[in-house]
Length: 257
Image (cartoon, rainbow, N blue to C red; front, side, top):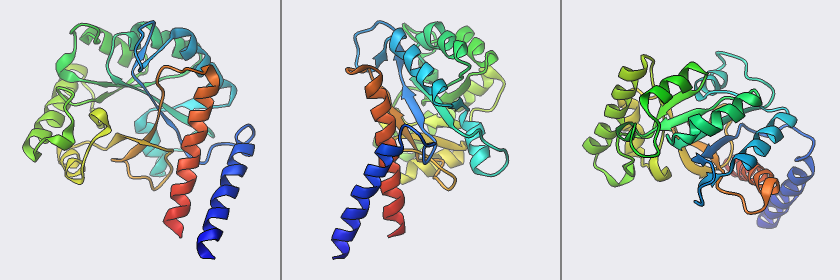
């Protein structure tokens, strides 16, 4: 009977979430995960038109973009977050983040966080140091995506430390500001990785698991909403946000049962 009660509760909650989706504030804070913005025919490249529509949708729904630093301070009670905060992140540090995504975000009053692979700066399609400086000067938070985009879960402790510490050191040396957040390459990490990040001086990290975040969330296991190239336009973007809310609600219920 208890099992059926739990199933009924879950179904009922999902229904309420779907109905409330159009009217109520989300249960937690979404961290959007982008890679590229542009015409490339790649899975993780969102077109300029789609990205513009997505940013417009966030504005129309009352979202305010915050940095990961601001999010962590808000969760800790050091500052007050806006009613509907959202974090807009970009992995890998492609130069279209500066050339194409930044002007669209500025147009809509948004800002983002770019996770840079420090060892790839200035190569091919990646950001140059001048572009990274310009991003920072225009309100973009810079984070680390390791030194060489290595799956940290597949490296030993010493290798993990080199990847996260050397990238942090290089970025801070170039930018003149602390770099305290990281995105795990491929979303992969272990408990040892978290300990390594803490030892290297990071405040938190974004994982690859879907969901939202709230006060009490583990800052080294932050959930994100993956945003690849959409096949169904803005509806797909909206459904991804809804799915993250459902995951978050289910995890919250499970933790309390």
